[in-house]
Length: 242
Image (tube, rainbow, N blue to C red):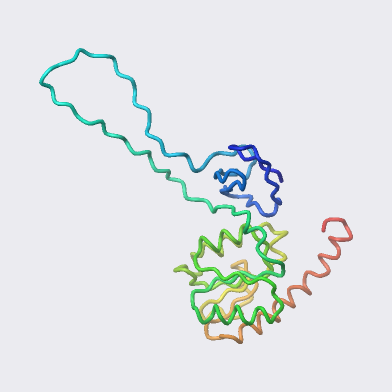
């Protein structure tokens, strides 16, 4: 898709699958460095970072000069703050975020991060993105095509019932979601609960107590996932839909 910068009219070529279909996204033009918002319905490109200016004061009718009257300094009214939630900035550099296969890791524990970074590389992943906060994770998740997502249910203060990153996963288009294997680390009662995983829209639940052994289970789960969809992708390719 080509998107024109409303400031300098530069044409930006962005793949359709990189743009979210259910929310606005902020784009930084690489030519003029101005920010603007892309509306997913394609009807408007609106500036989202207006320049701060003092609102024009209405002109008053001239009056007769008076004497012995106190004068007051004019008071500038600050611009009203927008009540809208901020949208993730679409950084064009992020779109070229390493070769596939890619994995997104959202965990808080530093030791677990090191384990994932080390072991995932041995499993053949070319790119491992380790996130530090929810907004960063959602920004990457909506802009980069991942093969695997590993998410701690308690990542960045969230819970399994109220997890913004997990909600973001559920909004990914199904064509892309079928190519993604999502594993969630949760309390032990959820461990390897296939029905529970299905109800949450993920592929695997594993426990905090599994440690490094969970990655062995993850490896088997990814292999099963590929086998499950192999025939589906072959048929799509034969029908010209791949």
